[in-house]
Image 1 (cartoon, rainbow, N blue to C red):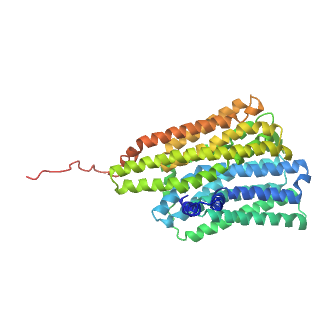
Image 2 (cartoon, helix red, strand yellow):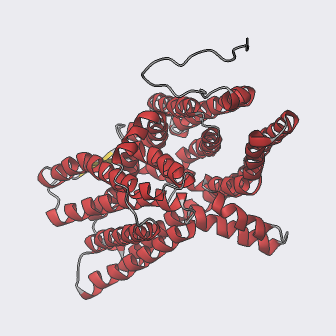
Image 3 (cartoon, one colour):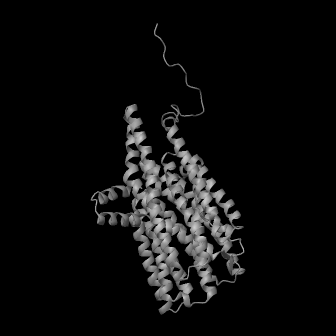
Length: 480
């Protein structure tokens, strides 16, 4: 993420209200703009095409299709993408640019095959058991695979610090989506649902193509060293579990409540819980600014302290190393506490606005009863994610696995227990799970601070392990 830090510093150094506004807008564009663009495109299409006038079953099939596309595209990509991102970062650092394309192609095959293992059986069930039109099913499956490609290619552009291009590609894709939906509905007289779903699939595919073209333009040579990529999965297996547990923890509470009495089964295929899912979505958006704030703060403040410490380790005196270490961990505490203070104010304001305004738009009743506890859970969840990123900085993968596994497990068990409580406590599983993950992550950060010198200076071996005759342990022979 260091690529946006320089620009943010240039913007905020002017110390004016307008500069702060520009800086916040820029950091938003670089982080959460793609998600906002997709949601805006869906809402705008629904408003222009008259989604509310469509029959209830068609609307529910469309909403469930889009929901499943996003959730399972993230889940099926999560086991691979963290390791592939690590490999690419190391290859760029070592200037092995010819090794990027083998990593990209192999990861692409893994993602597509793994996604199809879950997507194809579901689509067959949706058509033969649910009775959904084959063209609609195929369009939904194509949108699912296209989004998998989009999420996958985003990793490479993010490592290359091309956040702006990601947002631009999403903007172009969603503009095409909106225009195409109007053409299909008003000129070719397609039904509203298929027009929206087909257009969304085309928009995702176009975005993936533009991302792929950019990657191909950056990395032209191909070393065909695929075995080296496979070795990374054995070496950095903890990244697989850490990323998977985190993504699973984000949705496992929804899966639990999809088994409750409030669930809705659509065309014998899709299962959802509308009040709970909607409360989850609103709670996430209540706290989504934490991502923007954290990335802006870490780029502007912490990254420089981390760089100073790394440079002092290479050639500094012990006193310089100790001073840089203290300033670095003091910066971590300041950034986490600063994030808590700023995000708390924002979350309270957004929470009050949601409580007052959303019931006027039909989002009241059970949704608003579930929302408060869920919002508190997501507040802590984003703080936990910030702490996980710090653990990645110090290569504490064991701590990251313990954090995400604890978060996922407690969220699951807490959600199972929360189903037996009243509606205002339905979000208790997320709250307890996020608090557990945050506690583990904070304890591991303290452990890292205490043992950092040992991990930096005493972790690696002087001689590379291998088979053969043991080298002589003779260090010095006194001359006769």
